[in-house]
Length: 438
Image 1 (cartoon, one colour):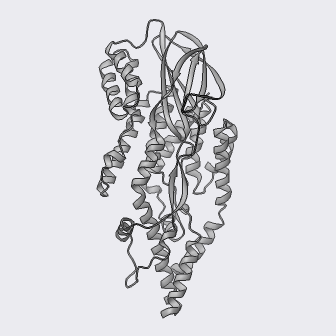
Image 2 (tube, rainbow, N blue to C red):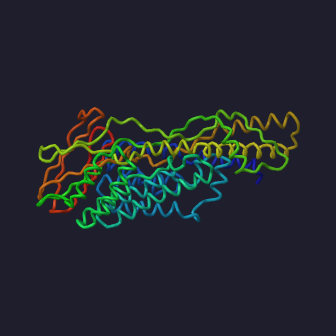
Image 3 (cartoon, rainbow, N blue to C red):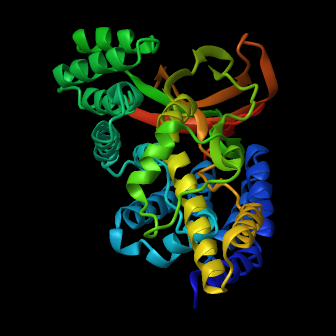
């Protein structure tokens, strides 16, 4: 089949795939999640994640967050491990899908998570592992750190300046290492080194100084006490919106290197100002932290350890020239295919140019940026550590805004504290209410 005719066929196939209804399903599920209606979110996302559409993997990532929020950390670990391995497997890349994406748009190709999403897969594995106590939390956190370092090396090889700043390591890995080393009540020196790294990577995380001092003194917790760690997933995290962008000189240079124009064909790019690309947006959420008390005695508020939103924006902006270049290459593919088809039809001169210009512009109207993403990530991962006497405590949680004003209603849950041991509680606080993972 001539390439020009294949364009029309692929556009029809992509347009009849029910993508709009799937998008609405994902949005409904995310809305339910933010309201704490985790059963409804799970049902909606399961239908999409179990399907065979290009939206299934991204829906599966969201489904893992619902499982974490529902207290099903073991299921989330199983799902995230499979997704991590699938995304790493080069044999699962679909060449046909990539060809189709050059002809139609990126929505038809196999979903490939952004760099920050890959890092967060391993980070959420670490937090889920901490919740179930399977002993793998430190390993997963280290994987997240190593993946971030790989992203920095790849960016540097592409000529990105200050790649180490764009892909700076997260404080999560050393923090979890410090927590786990300290919990042995032996490896305090290792814990100190880990917490010192946290202060270097995240100077604003004030609790690290107290962590260091505690380890210097060699006291995990007072006699007949244990440590409570509240891991809070705060705010609405990064999503992708479609925006129109102008093709930059850098993007054109990259596109010329990654795409070969058919011999003797001229590179003509109409309407470059209308190129559609995905852009990271952090949805508004009033939630700034989670304030906690134990049986009415205030314990403090969670403190930001990982700024997921800032990481996503920073990396997306750094990678934008390559995102634009792909959009430019796609436009070139369409122009070359249409031009070849017009030539095969016997059109010459002005008639051929008119046909080419009209066809390319008509086809380009159907282009849409690939906005599939892991939309249920939190804006921030926050932590609070408190030392409590042995026994059962009623933990009260209330979401607060940036000024410390309480929002919504207070949530309560019972926690059991054991002598000299750590207890971990995961809390979701997307907007005005805190929901305990249970």
